[in-house]
Image (cartoon, rainbow, N blue to C red; front, side):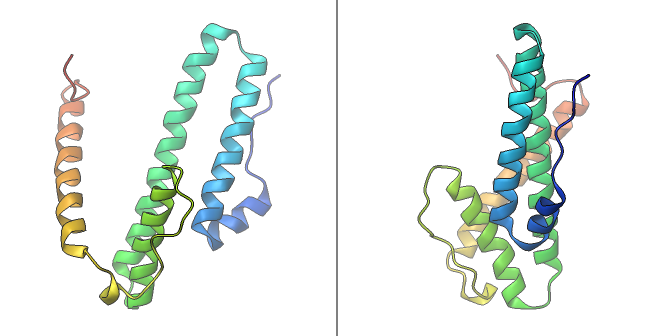
Length: 144
Protein backbone atom coordinates (compact mmCIF):
# COMPACT_ATOMS: atom_id res chain seq x y z
CA UNK A 1 0.00 0.00 0.00
CA UNK A 2 1.36 3.39 -0.97
CA UNK A 3 1.86 5.97 1.71
CA UNK A 4 0.73 9.48 0.93
CA UNK A 5 3.27 12.25 1.40
CA UNK A 6 2.34 14.56 4.21
CA UNK A 7 3.50 17.95 5.29
CA UNK A 8 4.92 17.63 8.82
CA UNK A 9 3.54 19.71 11.69
CA UNK A 10 6.77 21.72 11.85
CA UNK A 11 6.10 22.84 8.27
CA UNK A 12 2.66 24.14 9.23
CA UNK A 13 4.33 26.49 11.72
CA UNK A 14 6.71 27.60 8.97
CA UNK A 15 3.78 28.35 6.69
CA UNK A 16 2.24 30.79 9.09
CA UNK A 17 5.55 32.53 9.74
CA UNK A 18 7.41 32.90 6.49
CA UNK A 19 6.48 32.98 2.81
CA UNK A 20 9.95 31.92 1.68
CA UNK A 21 9.92 29.08 4.19
CA UNK A 22 6.60 27.98 2.79
CA UNK A 23 7.99 27.74 -0.70
CA UNK A 24 10.83 25.59 0.62
CA UNK A 25 8.36 23.38 2.47
CA UNK A 26 6.28 22.93 -0.68
CA UNK A 27 9.45 22.19 -2.63
CA UNK A 28 10.43 19.52 -0.07
CA UNK A 29 6.94 18.02 -0.21
CA UNK A 30 7.05 18.02 -4.01
CA UNK A 31 10.42 16.25 -4.00
CA UNK A 32 9.12 13.63 -1.55
CA UNK A 33 6.03 13.09 -3.70
CA UNK A 34 8.14 12.80 -6.87
CA UNK A 35 10.32 10.11 -5.23
CA UNK A 36 7.26 8.14 -4.12
CA UNK A 37 5.68 8.39 -7.55
CA UNK A 38 8.76 7.28 -9.47
CA UNK A 39 9.47 4.39 -7.11
CA UNK A 40 5.99 2.94 -7.00
CA UNK A 41 4.33 3.46 -10.37
CA UNK A 42 4.98 2.07 -13.83
CA UNK A 43 6.65 4.58 -16.15
CA UNK A 44 3.50 5.16 -18.24
CA UNK A 45 1.55 6.15 -15.13
CA UNK A 46 4.42 8.16 -13.63
CA UNK A 47 4.17 10.90 -16.22
CA UNK A 48 0.42 11.42 -15.78
CA UNK A 49 0.59 11.30 -11.99
CA UNK A 50 3.60 13.63 -11.93
CA UNK A 51 1.80 16.13 -14.17
CA UNK A 52 -1.33 15.93 -12.03
CA UNK A 53 0.78 16.42 -8.89
CA UNK A 54 2.45 19.48 -10.41
CA UNK A 55 -0.90 20.95 -11.41
CA UNK A 56 -2.17 20.40 -7.87
CA UNK A 57 0.96 22.00 -6.41
CA UNK A 58 0.67 24.94 -8.82
CA UNK A 59 -2.92 25.46 -7.67
CA UNK A 60 -1.79 25.33 -4.04
CA UNK A 61 0.83 28.00 -4.81
CA UNK A 62 -1.78 30.20 -6.48
CA UNK A 63 -4.04 29.72 -3.46
CA UNK A 64 -1.26 30.92 -1.17
CA UNK A 65 -0.61 33.92 -3.40
CA UNK A 66 -4.35 34.66 -3.32
CA UNK A 67 -4.48 34.40 0.48
CA UNK A 68 -1.39 36.55 1.02
CA UNK A 69 -2.66 39.11 -1.48
CA UNK A 70 -6.11 39.19 0.14
CA UNK A 71 -4.61 39.83 3.57
CA UNK A 72 -2.47 42.61 2.12
CA UNK A 73 -5.41 44.12 0.24
CA UNK A 74 -7.51 44.19 3.41
CA UNK A 75 -4.76 45.48 5.69
CA UNK A 76 -4.99 48.93 7.21
CA UNK A 77 -1.29 49.13 8.05
CA UNK A 78 0.83 50.28 5.05
CA UNK A 79 3.63 47.95 6.26
CA UNK A 80 1.34 44.93 5.94
CA UNK A 81 0.26 46.01 2.45
CA UNK A 82 3.89 46.51 1.40
CA UNK A 83 5.02 43.25 2.97
CA UNK A 84 2.47 41.21 1.04
CA UNK A 85 3.24 42.82 -2.31
CA UNK A 86 7.01 42.93 -1.97
CA UNK A 87 7.38 39.40 -0.58
CA UNK A 88 5.18 37.89 -3.29
CA UNK A 89 7.28 39.75 -5.85
CA UNK A 90 10.55 38.54 -4.33
CA UNK A 91 9.45 34.92 -4.08
CA UNK A 92 8.30 34.91 -7.70
CA UNK A 93 11.56 36.54 -8.81
CA UNK A 94 13.56 33.88 -6.96
CA UNK A 95 11.89 31.23 -9.15
CA UNK A 96 14.05 32.53 -12.02
CA UNK A 97 17.16 31.45 -10.14
CA UNK A 98 17.97 34.91 -8.82
CA UNK A 99 18.86 34.74 -5.16
CA UNK A 100 19.71 38.42 -4.84
CA UNK A 101 17.14 40.39 -2.90
CA UNK A 102 15.41 42.94 -5.15
CA UNK A 103 12.22 43.54 -3.19
CA UNK A 104 12.36 44.63 0.44
CA UNK A 105 9.24 44.94 2.56
CA UNK A 106 8.44 48.65 2.90
CA UNK A 107 5.26 50.59 3.58
CA UNK A 108 3.06 50.60 0.48
CA UNK A 109 3.52 54.35 0.06
CA UNK A 110 7.23 53.79 -0.60
CA UNK A 111 6.91 51.12 -3.31
CA UNK A 112 8.25 52.35 -6.65
CA UNK A 113 6.57 51.55 -9.96
CA UNK A 114 3.12 50.70 -8.65
CA UNK A 115 1.38 52.28 -11.65
CA UNK A 116 3.29 50.08 -14.11
CA UNK A 117 2.75 47.02 -11.90
CA UNK A 118 -0.98 47.72 -11.79
CA UNK A 119 -1.15 48.03 -15.59
CA UNK A 120 0.67 44.70 -16.09
CA UNK A 121 -1.46 42.93 -13.50
CA UNK A 122 -4.61 44.35 -15.08
CA UNK A 123 -3.58 42.78 -18.41
CA UNK A 124 -2.91 39.43 -16.70
CA UNK A 125 -6.27 39.70 -14.90
CA UNK A 126 -8.13 40.27 -18.17
CA UNK A 127 -6.31 37.41 -19.89
CA UNK A 128 -7.02 35.02 -17.01
CA UNK A 129 -10.68 36.04 -17.11
CA UNK A 130 -10.76 35.26 -20.85
CA UNK A 131 -9.15 31.87 -20.20
CA UNK A 132 -11.70 31.11 -17.48
CA UNK A 133 -14.57 31.97 -19.83
CA UNK A 134 -13.14 29.84 -22.63
CA UNK A 135 -12.60 26.95 -20.17
CA UNK A 136 -16.27 27.07 -19.23
CA UNK A 137 -17.07 26.66 -22.91
CA UNK A 138 -14.96 23.51 -23.05
CA UNK A 139 -11.84 25.02 -24.58
CA UNK A 140 -8.56 25.60 -22.81
CA UNK A 141 -8.18 29.03 -24.45
CA UNK A 142 -5.29 28.01 -26.67
CA UNK A 143 -5.38 27.18 -30.35
CA UNK A 144 -3.11 24.79 -32.18
